[in-house]
Image (cartoon, rainbow, N blue to C red):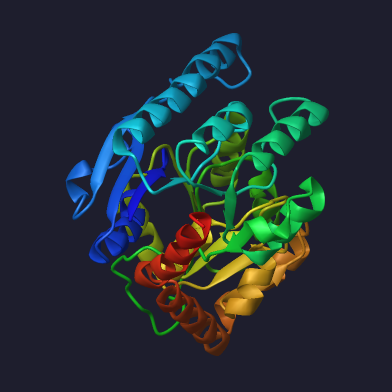
Length: 367
């Protein structure tokens, strides 16, 4: 099978899924943004790094809006050119853009059977008025072809809120990346908690800082690593200035450094206040066999309960979060059970396993 993946934000470690398809004998083309991944890692498949990137601009400014208005259509045109040249049996749009794909996906589906992944039923951050956002999403989902979601809760919300036919929706777990995991017997004497990723306003940074402040005698470190909105980064800096237990590692984090942070961590914290998706951060924690504490939003709570990989707390509840953090780090036996759950889930969602499920979706999309 000839498979075209439009995957603009692919991470190097996620390319294990492409290698799994190539090992089956499939002809795979991964199209992505130039400079984001090392193209020399393409083993048995082809990478086309010609998706335009957006310049760094302050969100909400005229220059920010103008840059997106220019780049988003260019991305759609680059995708169409690649599909024309490759002539795939199936096109998989791994990341959609609701500003342009309401129109462009319909045309793309005339070129080859179309599969689209829905990560976020609604965006993390609304950028247009709610009625316009809903209309754009409605049209995008109508033209998205066969739809892949990474958790049943995401699919249910997609069908209930946007009227998508459940027959179009297929659940395929998120592939856990292959990394060098370093197992621990239990939490360290001074355990490290890690909050990693893009620092958006829905990530609950303020809730986590308040939770830690409620446990002034808890011996621990909290590392907040990543970059994002300026006001959220400012919260992290201020927290680190007030509390010596907090380490602010703000800015772009290399993949090598990211894996070091996960290996050093005893616990990964996702205190999100709102969410409509499954989480790459959660699966990075699984890859490193680390237990998690998560808010019960989106697919996070149900996933962690099912995977027996950690603790689930109500969103926006610093007291409950503080108690869960303390419990997770104080109960070594429970910590080991959660770490084992994370490791077991990583094995069940190995790229070769996920590739089998995804290939079945591609076969169905061609019928």
